[in-house]
Image (tube, rainbow, N blue to C red; front, side):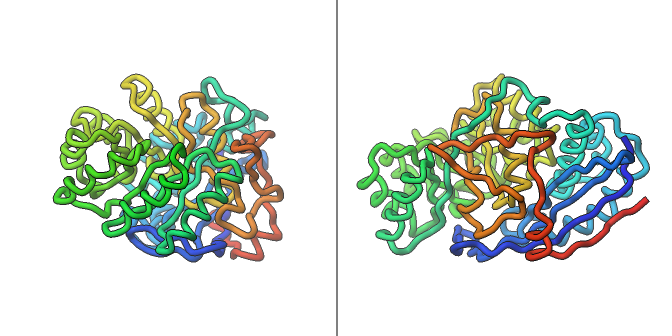
Length: 369
């Protein structure tokens, strides 16, 4: 397989409502849709998902674009690719920049599946047609509005709720949710908002019967997370820490967590993500799939990957209309009875809407042979 063309749409989608976390407030999401075309005219779709500010991890959409164009794409266009695993090996000479790598690597996976006229999930073990999904709720200072939002998501069928928290906004909203929904599968996500000095306070979260506490400390704090996990009953989940299989091995060895939030872009693509789920299965670590406010392309990819039976905990793969008024697919992704259908068809199973891409984005050719 040889790459003959790479194009992209630089897109901005406005959010239905602002989404607030411990590190900022999001009102729209910028992303690139990557289209890779082979010598036979087949096209694979990928999505470049970093945020515009380096507040989640170091990588931003601007830095990822530079790395892709100057360092990653030149490696692709002069190589005969036999299998998508070749891409991750090819990119090893470029350190870090996992989201830039993932946008191209996942497009190659989609392209490879389409060349072989197979669904992407055909390359994974023990898959299913529908998957249970959860929803993430941003910081809401009005607790009445918060419980109304949660109630609305429950009515829509979401099977698990994740609440964003930060110092000063944790016990009170949890108390409000638990009072109204005592049996709701519930977890919290701190996005690195706390420090080791907050351990006595964080231990109070044990009272709320949480599925897990996601990323309370900084992204390089493996030892501190291990100390917290020893002192708290609730499972710790690592997110920003996990950039590779090596990070999972380190976290397991230190006892830093009992759960992994796996985000395909944050680990560089599907090839590394597959290694991580094999490790988690071997070590009995709970692994579930997180999201990055993806458009329909990234969401369809996540659905294909999350179809694997190892994903028993509902991931952050909500319907298109959870965040956006309109998506860039001809058929937006919908939730029914608490589950989302894995897209049928070859590759990731979706079709781009050129109308929506041009409405919200700008077309740019990157490479033409």
